[in-house]
Length: 80
Image (cartoon, rainbow, N blue to C red; front, side):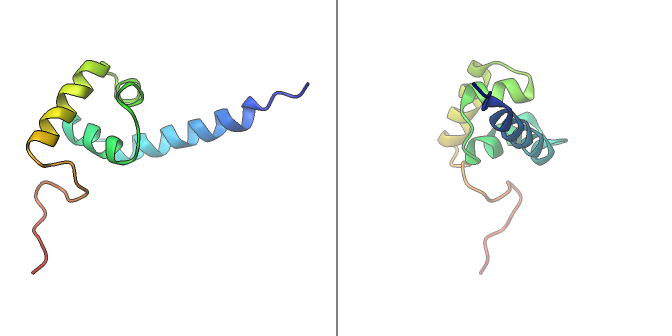
């Protein structure tokens, strides 16, 4: 029976590499925000950036509480 995991593993690796490129050099909280917006869960985010799921959950809670879970960067101004 053929192993169908190879394509899935390749796709997962590509996704992880793109995610790392997206957040590289950014502060941890910003990394968590971007990866969460991209659809990753706390465990996936924690594994990717080298922290714990609890740290990710605390950061996400803080971001939601402060209304910063949108796509705009923290320094961006609204268009008038």
